[in-house]
Image (cartoon, rainbow, N blue to C red):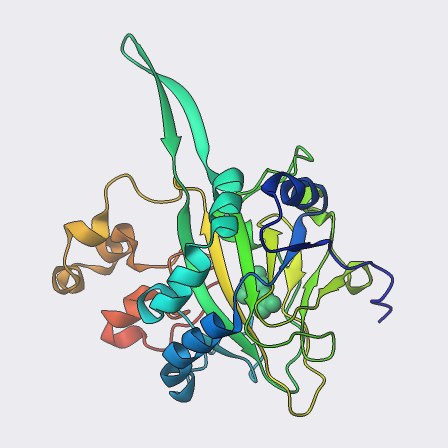
Length: 296
Ligand SMILES: O=C(O)CCC(=O)C(=O)O
Ligand SMILES: [Fe+2]
């Protein structure tokens, strides 16, 4: 497919000053950080998520190959992943720089300067099994219906941190990335020839801007599994004003009509926003909708 022409994204050592990382991240849309996690941290995370992999969950979504396994909701399942990834100083610095919003606005006679801190948007594993097909190239900020019109590298609602928990190679499904695509408009379609491979050693990570095209690669090996943990973060305003999940119990929601359930956030917003275990949340409260899988 002629995928070798594009050079790899720039790599930096764990602990590199963030100004150097940001220069490359905003220029190319993605960077690799080497040795973000220790092998000991990976072992601890793997031990915590093993029972969920053993449970043989498959998302059933078309966007993942059928040989690919996922474990979602890692913030609840793996305290080691929370410590090692969400609390890593480089991850925190990148998330803050890309996604913190500060805006001045009037309230009567006061001019208020307000800061909205970022949120964890999703936290899951992707284990690409032998024979998996390539994922479609996509932008992760599509779930917010983000538009890209200004050629501004920061014109996005999300940032991805993709951490390798196995070696990732071109052959076993390393993440495909289209460097520079973060400043494209919304009409231009990415092609495989424009991709490079985010090959990584275990513990490395890729920071990928939410406006940069990428995909899980295809796995052409017969016996290798390529495993990554994906932590996606978003701007803090991408939520309702009042927290309806705390205002109404699950039992009470289940008694309301479907249109009310939808208003309270129990129907996912297409594409891919508000899911649980890659399912529409109303699967948990509507007995007659268990077949509903479509998050597009
Ligand atoms: O598995 C990967 O390398 C990337 C997965 C991805 O982009 C996604 O699920 O949104
Ligand atoms: Fe993605």
